[in-house]
Length: 258
Image (cartoon, rainbow, N blue to C red; front, side):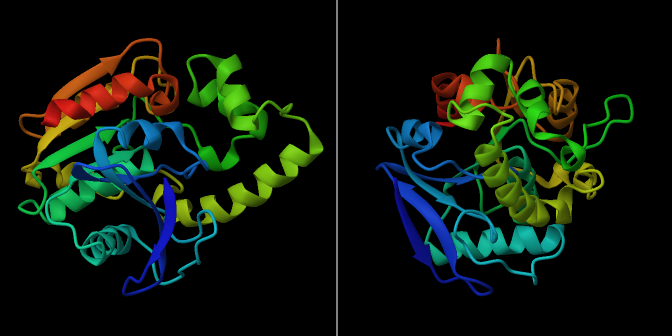
């Protein structure tokens, strides 16, 4: 995947591009995109992938003008327009799934294929979503992965979670990225999406790890109820980071959109 820059109305956007075939736009979650991300590499074997970074993620510029859910949604549509794409497959994970769902709701005739991977955006009182903003570094693997040991290794690149150098880099990066994500996820990730899901006309596949501890599978059924005709694919032995734990199964699920 090649990291590029494109001009958008509010701020220059950094994005990863690679592969060939049907255009697919992937919107990342609150944790951002790893360099040499294996999930993007797997997608690029089947699709021409465009994966924009939200402002403040990676080496991208920050953008204080993007303040609320509508701003995030319109900015993401601005990026699609700047890339010159018409009706790409739209996919998003977690926070990125929330944004993708909003994009499909606000412009229902511009997206015909939608993949939502453990999306945020709803709130069920019986299943409160843990607060990422108060989560300690050593708690993330347990929260995000089915296989905690594997998840720890992936998050820390093999370093110990209490290693001072890893902690310093994690805390600095997290503060910058979550500062942006907090505009729509804090204190709870509910910005009224539930009342707009009926507007989504795209063929939609919902993809969930059966062991997701962050956004538990009860939310999958709430999304399926809200989006007419949507299909749910539950992937065994996977947590919230199903894209990392079960990469090929997620790509296969997205391929069900045609």
